Length: 290
View 1 (cartoon, rainbow, N blue to C red):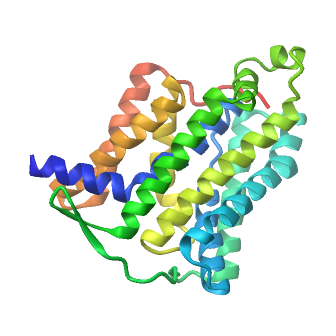
View 2 (cartoon, helix red, strand yellow):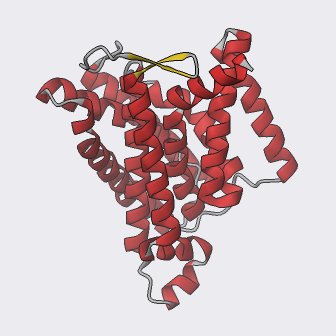
């Protein structure tokens, strides 16, 4: 029982950004069918944007969240309009699109190293207080971060599922031709999705970065889990992504405590995800829609 309690508390407080990042990736994958490897750099850039605003302008962490989300969202839209959309209009195949996204990921990563250097960077935040939750010590910052991530994840869920814009997004993802006949403008909705996905990834990166450190490989270390959560949970929509993300966070913490090694926990989970996808017969190279 003690292990379960610790796993739940530590998993939810330390790995909550995983859910937010997976939601953003799932939105892109559902709409385009593209496994965008460069999404890992969206997460990394969010951490760097937040760190830069925090350390350069002296803003506290919560004041940098909105501008960080906007910057990450705009960068995501820029990559779509400048790279992915022109490639798709030239009928570039889905495998080539994945290769393009991989190249973009490498370009952005080395660009970050050129601008900020390779050494790890840190946010300038005051030392947090420690709060006991179910007998587990958790910093007050992580609790606030968990609440923020949970609120943002639910906000995104209700926006996609309940709002009129969300209805257009789901219609375009289901059938582009029918959506056009219904008066939906694919370009506008697609740009909106890329912005929302970029903002979600950027915010996840900011929460990851402030919880530990910021480095050019931050997003890449998280990407495989984000990909697996989005693919497995996406079968049941955004609600499934949230549930699988929460379960993954708890499982990661539990196995890390049991094995005393986080890497082993990640390997076990990745093998489990691959087995689930194999049984389900998911096609990872489905044709892109837009």
